Length: 304
Image (cartoon, rainbow, N blue to C red; front, top):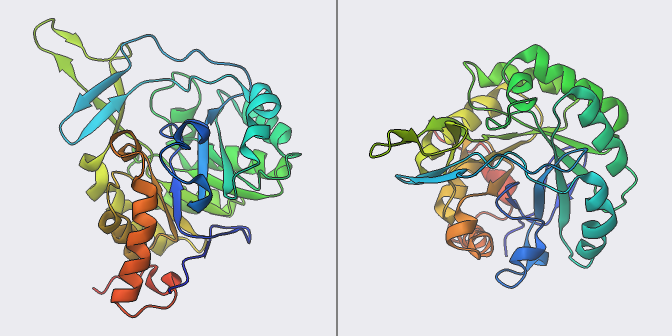
């Protein structure tokens, strides 16, 4: 039986490389009837902000060829509600609980991180500097080395546990952004977030989304995601977590071979709620078929 445990930064080890992507898995408990949450390496709860958010007006989702557009806008009940009501219910699961942190300004990010820092089971946060569907915050920070670095530096000052920074693909040079957050103290990076896209209803001549543009995810973005993970993994020394269009075990292994230490499954959770469990089984089988005793030996093992 191959060893599947991996480190995702800051000395934090998870039992296997399979995580769920924020915004596609609720708070985890919604999927408990479909998948054994304790089997997962971890699950990343939906984007959490300082104050409750209603999100963007409807319509805010649209199906596209081999993917979907979303402009949900970080709808959530706020960090205090999470701490008081949701966190206690998650403690029964033997899996890493990671909180995705979002904010409209640096003090908001810092405040959320500070509030979460006292929770013993929250040993990592994923900082969303890259969400393309929020009118304030995310996009501005994630698209420049200065902006990305400034958020990372501010959170690093108050968050002493594992700090994952989620990168935007809507940039010219994603490797330079990755290096900037690494230099400011990020323990790992996750990529890619959604790509900026748009769809039009030709009969009404109106955009399909209330916000006009939104985030594209699903299989359509996977080749871009694999390429960016490969580029970033070569540029930084910290672990890379790969995501973007993963819909089967074979997809997940592409990211591992490109240099990702772990992966996140997002949009496919809507199509097949048990996909994460299936990917874990595939990884184990893949290692056995190829005579690999430790999946870490396959990280970045692309033969060029």
